[in-house]
Image 1: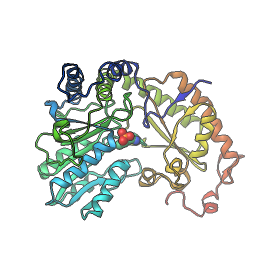
Image 2: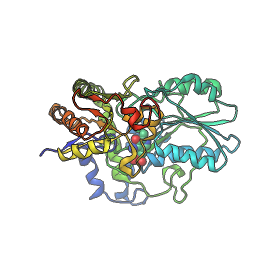
Image 3: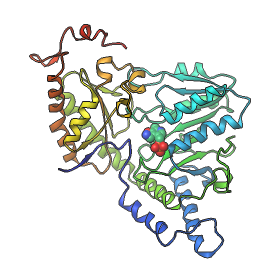
Image 4: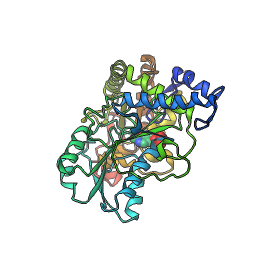
Length: 410
Ligand code: PMP
């Protein structure tokens, strides 16, 4: 049975070109880049070249503004904790309810340290309300941290507009964006559309580099204190011997992604759209989360009323299809994900969400196979559901009463 991997927002297969680029630094060129002898020059140069490549890909200009980290979680932690440390005079942070936990949990920590955090809500499509954002900006706002694209739904936030409004309101407010899901998929130009973004995080393993490497763009002049102390690596901003091989991998993967971005975009969007319309046509009472908002081309999040996403995932797994749930069930909680809750996905569907996230390594045959099996899985699970009207293939009229819930609310 061929494996069909459609969970690329969780992690991606390293590109063959990336694997080749990395190999020398795990074999003959293993030297510590900080060492003084001649053989160590090669890994040191590799880091310099990688930094320049990353800077070029994101339009950063001066490559010294690129800091290599271990992952996007570290980049986000550095951005939020580092700016809070450096600016004790400002005590207010703005973020959104749908951020990744590597931002949300840091915000909770900042609250424990006495800062105030405003969590912006989203509408049922996943869009932010710009008026609510403008109202949230305060004279003591230190930082705005708003993701570029959501990992569960692929919904894209207007970072260009939000960062511009922020700087027009008060140039001293620091603007951070978590671009982990958009990097390599959407154009990012830190001297162009993103010129008002001060801090930008991303990770290697979402764009066909290995796990264990990430980066943080820190615009020159942005007050941000390091929080890991030790050696003088990364210009004294992040201590620890550099992961040379994976830094090379990150730069190679990003360069590759940027060079084929438009081609990949069209390809992924055509696969995703075909999957989306075929499923929508064949499955009754299925909603597409984020459909009413601009979305990443590779992400499809569907919610099937009256069945659990987790059961769907088990059945997909039996067919060799690796997808994931929009809910946190897989991590041991039975609650729907914070993103589904924030979008007010009806109670009856919030538990039934499944995310397909494609990559350039998916083929039209993969999509055909999903279209072939997914509707059958949903139908067979609904056969077991007391809330389903089997005769008419639709929810029972009294389903919401039986559930004791109004399906339109929580
Ligand atoms: N932010 C977003 C939007 C993500 O999707 C992820 C990974 N799921 C992260 C941050 C964390 O990335 P990493 O695994 O590199 O720490």
